[in-house]
Length: 212
Image (tube, rainbow, N blue to C red; front, side):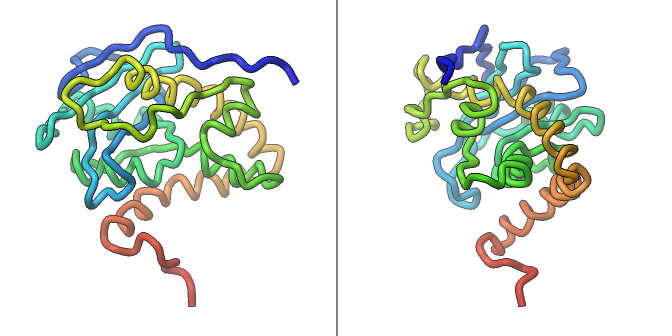
């Protein structure tokens, strides 16, 4: 097996409270969030990160209760900009809960993985990036205090690396989805994600609402 490349951002730009005005991420932007846990009704949004796939990552750090962020909201709701997430269901819910916006349109690489990589049950970002791109992501900082007033350099690098390769993954999955005849199915799933997030926030997070 070829030697794995270590994920490394080219540049990390940290912003407090919002993106600066005038940033242009193009027609497709990779996005992610860092929170205090995985319950969007309990655990607050601490960081949002975005990248246009050029190795540069913009991180927005939020103080508790300070979620105005008009520039970030404009990007997340721009109908001409596709937002790529890995496990978009959670990120869309937490952004709805704290920023009050419906993020759209979206592309979820985890859903794309489940629709194409049916030979495995390992659909985490680390596993997908390792197999499809030959890049090793470190998850050492995943379970750390993201609400800290000052984030460590290790936390910043971890957050940045989670969005650095989503453009490449999307390109790979687009080919695989077409090959398997599941591209339209994937798009329908992506369009439903906003509703799925609303269900999560309304209390239907575990049960299958389509079940008998």
